[in-house]
Length: 273
Image: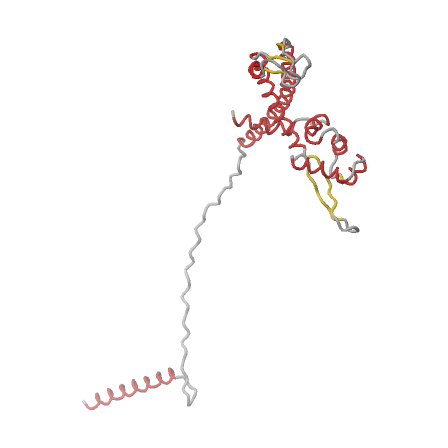
């Protein structure tokens, strides 16, 4: 319930049609009737110079600035300032803030409804007395305090018989305010329904699962293990420093000489026998 109410309040400030009459209704108690000309010049415009406002309204620049600052203190206008290159001072450019105007409008309407309902209950329950010279209107307790005499002119006060007429007037005002607020609430409901539809569409789009392309993995082929051929080591022959011939060659010749000597010895031994 709180979230729905928050949404309504949120969209009311956006969807309400901001007319000149509504703005004047809000600014009248702040500026008075003199300020209506200023509001007309600001309505529907952005970044209006304070000097232009003074020319169009034919008010003194000090009066215009005073009015604008009163509106600014109530958060109804905003400003931008730019430095004049020739004169060296700052010029302020003013704009109405629509969201805060809407907020204040709804706030005042609700407060007005509360006051009117309280007044209607008082009119229905209480007895009122009026002065014949229309000086005052007192309830029963107040009349008792002044002994049913007018505190201003001293005349004897009489019972007011116009209670029913007053109650009817108050009811009409209450009905009118409630109708205005209901119209605004209808517009708000339309906006909320549109927003809900958009959100629902987004959810539907998310739910649709996009088919992912399945990437076929290639079968892993075992690499053929190639047997490495044994590397033949090269026999490095050391050469003698003196002759430059290889040492291995010398060893072979020495071995041959030894075998020849052995064979000769064997033959000699046989002959002796």
